[in-house]
Length: 175
Image 1 (cartoon, helix red, strand yellow):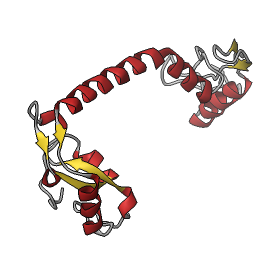
Image 2: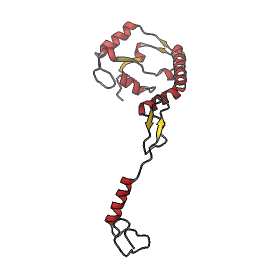
Image 3: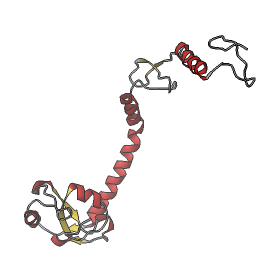
Image 4: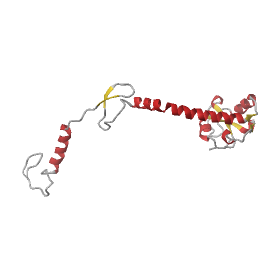
């Protein structure tokens, strides 16, 4: 039998062997891949309308770039995202309207000044202007008609206030 790559005469050990050695088999494979013609797939981007060549790995590609893919996602999901946002805002406003904040702006500014710009939770300096109002008992867990006094709120940095979410944390308590 002749080798499929170098055409040398050889005795195969099995009927399925087509090459005289492993090198011929390896070179045959690389030669095949180099000579193999790849099918070029032209597509039109669904977002911007530009004609592009689809990648070999994903012949069903619909967009010319990740920018167009993200733009398509935003366009298709925008109504759903707006509805969720409106629902969340309505719920939050309803909760806020049912609670009462019984402290003046002057009391709040005094409490801010007493921290000297340090967040009580993480003890990092962020400055007085970057501290946000945090309700110790979260608004979502407050009973209807609950009255927040100056002792019921605390200044926290935005990072700590966001990570606290709707959990209860005592003043000065670390996470």
